[in-house]
Image 1 (cartoon, rainbow, N blue to C red):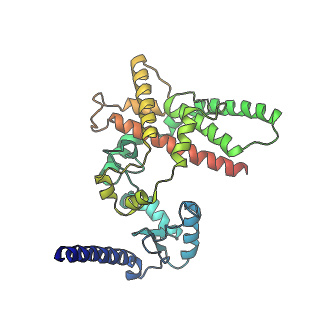
Image 2: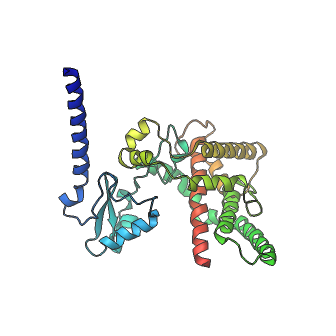
Image 3: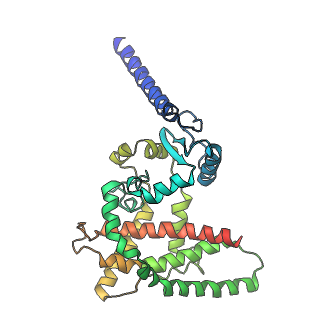
Length: 318
């Protein structure tokens, strides 16, 4: 009987400890006299995200709620306090003048178990600084201009395909068509591959793109990543689907090996990464990239360029 009550007591103590922790976390902004959006127990302000509201709509609503009350307001992603900046001058300080203090985005990565997630957008602190120092030479205006002919060629293919399509169809889904176009552009610029997504909606790169953006993380995984990233790393939580990781590692490996072996030069993003490739691919020395780092940067180049560009083009044409 004593053991039974010991277990009950232990469970109660743990529950009370969790409740105290959540309550303490959710009082973070109130304790600092910062205007905040009232959190929901455990979820904070994140409960509607991915369920009843898209993330952009949610943040816009929270922004409008807090704007004008203070240069920044407080919100909660589950139990994690987050500052939502509502003042343009303060935003300029964060993004430009004092950026050296604010480069950590608070996004999750797992370099050991999920190496594609360890790209420049996700990495914190010294890791971000070191990688940024290595990659800065690849993003000069001169080197970006070297990709223009490739982009123009993809644009011509899109134009030709569009002329064919409107000749026998009066209506079509433009968002999907533009997603296929940007997939072809990124595939060509980043990997030097003819993805052919324009004429084949089920081309491999397009299928992978749909898997990346069409598979929201589960609630438990989202909670761990948002509130306990170190613990999530410790237990090996991955953000990227295994088939997506496998695909990108395979494509990058084949592309790097083929170009190095055959001395192929295309003046694209992959060429720039190969130029910084460490001959010992397992190591990341000063100024040189390991194979995992090359794959991660190629992945984020695709990730950041495909969905954002197609969405912007769709909105512009609309």
